[in-house]
Image (cartoon, rainbow, N blue to C red):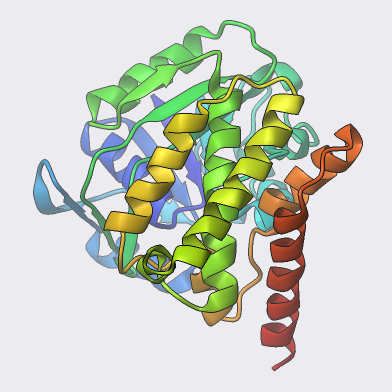
Length: 308
């Protein structure tokens, strides 16, 4: 397949690198100059559990210099950069390009609809782990999966072909009509751990070791899931809380992306996570006081970091 990955951070580079390694025509698009330069000069170093460390040659450039006309474009940019990235990459979007968003948060399909016809938009969620060790070097150890569907619920042969291509390279992917519930469940997880760690400047393990902080994380997740259920989603409540406890007990040194952004002085994805949840909650008149409080605190810290 001809696949373009817009947003070649850890996740985008992993997906693109694995597809390129298997012979697919891949182009990575990103704005990180150091990452682009390293991959262009030396190739992309992939370090995965199944195959260890190796170097993959894959084209990479800035979005406004895209040269490939892809069958599929996979979007991995931070949600706050979606419109700017797609505007820059307009040259890669053809009338029949299928665009799959695997971004965090809610409301991504709505942003895509400004650039892509509704029947060409797919939404999904992934639990595949990936970290950027340094520019040009991506590490992924551990299992995960990808679930996706067309945003409008229709059948797409091309999305099925993409799912098979991802599965063939070790990224287990399925076309799943219940993916909206899975997206909400990941939002609940992120709203709990990203915000608490971001505000407290601590690791997931630090939260897990505090009974009060652990209880707060579960309460935030429960609030988000109540909003999801009121919005018509069939939620696996037990599964989400079990996943949360597993992270609190085992991902001890992990610093969630929201904390990493705050430490680096970057804007966070708070609006696509807590912000979108609160917009739905207000529309449905569902109270979410803990989610609202953490939303305000993250935005406060974000402003303080920005103005420092």
